[in-house]
Length: 193
Image (tube, rainbow, N blue to C red; front, side, top):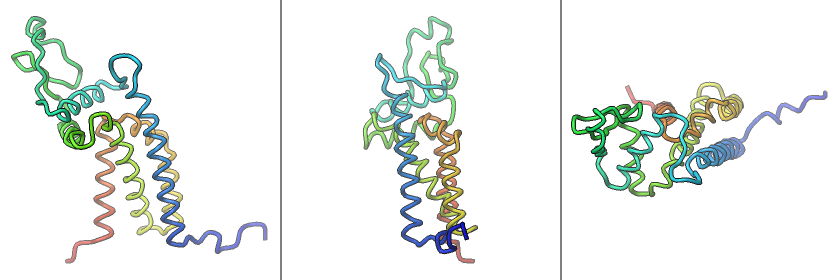
């Protein structure tokens, strides 16, 4: 026969875990490099692809440095409260406040107080790597180890996974990652009836 023996396709537990950890680490490193290239700009401010990401990064950095979510902008009153990014609201006194999902700036900001503002851009790649491991566990329980590895490789290579993970301050990947981790924990430890 020209195809490999059946034992070639059987994964031992150590090989399975090593394979999944390698996939997750390579994915986290690769997307961290992409995320870092957005955050390290040669001029004054980091570059972001979406106004939502810019707003989340701004407010997360404020929380991480111990400031309030309310960003005063005194010139805004003179401009009729028209100066603001798409995902920020303006109060009557001209101050900017978050206008989209509050969880990401608050959560990332609180974590940023412990690990530093510069490390905030790496939280989404780390959460995405955890999501890959959780996805693999769900697939392993439902379909077996070989299918779990193949499905995880396909998910790790999917372009939208790379795009949204490299945009570190959008809530899409953290939300999906936490859902997958929750399902994986539920499958691993089902509630007793």
